[in-house]
Image (cartoon, rainbow, N blue to C red; front, side, top):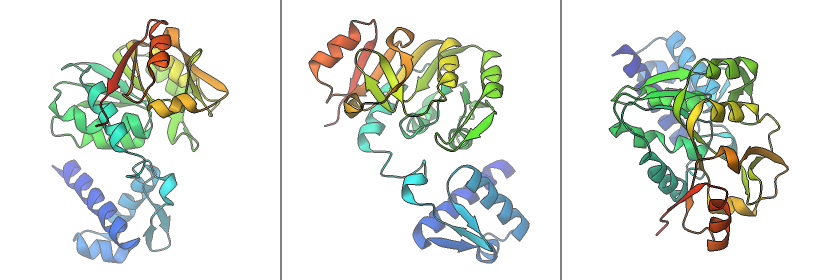
Length: 255
């Protein structure tokens, strides 16, 4: 109960911050009838999750583009993609959820699934999944924090993943190359490759507009991908080309 109360208080802090733009430790301590030490711990954890920026005596909002929870990033198209991808998850599956706004949109869809084990390299995903009433088991990769991807990366994270095996990995993509696979600006691609290696089914969630992005680094070749979940704006020729690589393409309705 204490853990759930803590998460509820932290959600309320974010709501207050979104409404007011700035909060103080003193005000929050009085509002939630708890100590300033507890509030400072809350703010430190929320800052670690990339949800706010601490300052002397309180906290302020991050610039909108820096927040993984930005409502602009979680578009209706991304939510539709996540809902469709979630239909692939069965009760008691062991799954990986990579960092990113599209993969994070999966979280609300997990509430109807029983007995899940969820591994992630994202603090936001981990804390949000822990709030689920069905209480999935959550595993964190650990590793080195990468500010570019807002996730943990590196050798320690890879070793943690390699200690397990998973039914499915749900991965995002900065771009899609029709001939090569998923692409990224981030040169730290090895963790995604390890996620694919330790999973029986690799599911990429990406909006169709990412087919237009020219990005240099290949993250996963089509041969490593089982399913691409995108939206119904993908053109028929691109869909056919990707399917010729043996990838199942699922298209979420944007109507």
